[in-house]
Image (cartoon, rainbow, N blue to C red; front, top):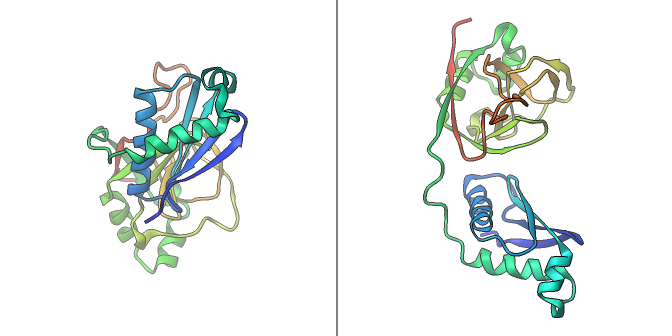
Length: 227
């Protein structure tokens, strides 16, 4: 069992680490602490940044110091508060039920890396597509670029390290895999992941009321489309 570790990043930010690698149980603990802080923010809390295995907490050190002048370093006071909260956390009982089905054209001009992926995994392309599309993914976080979702967890049979040579440009909507995750590139971009398909859905619109199509906690299933 991995116990949380606590670190000071700066005079106004600290970090709680819940695990060594991305997995569902670790992600749930990150989300549970984040949810608790959203429900019961301490005076001086500015923002939280949940990731795969960490939760970064930003705060106003002056507000912390004025509230608890005897504690000394404000960051140390925040860490003590987070340790107390972490000790009382229960697993999330009601993760978001939102399921989005995303149509994908696999292979061919839409998934240039699919043949190599199948060869390296010693599978047929159809088997890669079937296994990928049958997996129910969860959005673990949005990062790297606006609207860019990290989706886990990829079946062990499909795990591959990132590409040794980065693709200089892949189209918006490219669906790719690397490590134990899959992703969707929201805009035309360089890519270090293996592109196996493409969707026409728009993942990010800066002018929309909700700019990101996906958000952490949502579930995603990919639906193969005929090329």
